[in-house]
Image (cartoon, rainbow, N blue to C red; front, side):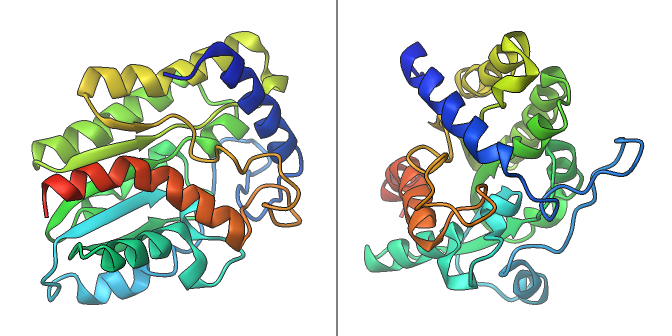
Length: 239
């Protein structure tokens, strides 16, 4: 669990990052009642075509533009970097990038069945950033993530939960409630847990693109390492 002092640092970092948010990631209509999800991540289209023929067990990264790799080439998105790392260490898994720019936790839930097509062994859940930007109720985020986790575990899929933080301009009460969603779910479902997906990246001018939100190629390497710390013990015990 993240220490209070560390949380404060992360919140400041996230505030700097979210403050320059571009409209490419979240497109909100005039009534602010709908978020438009754009195209899937760079590997997702390939996945749809090869789902019935894949022979390797799969690791699926379910997320938003941070997972899709907005602004990066396909090889630089963190799911691709995980694929390279797995191959280098001799683990025979196929990593599927199921990131969709602009997606909320509700959006991820709505396409979960598609994302879990094939022999999926591990699900990386990296959702919530767009929920925070729209100040959606933390209880809704928690319920959506819980349903995703429960459906995956019902299929005997191991889940890695990657946390996000809300920008502090929504008020301390919202920020605290939002923050608590992730460690509480990780504890309840006994999940491998990455406290903050963007740890070491958020707020850094050199590790984020010009929008101040999406990691550069170097930033994506750090994100991949954040996930790898939780993923490696799983694949090492389930080769």
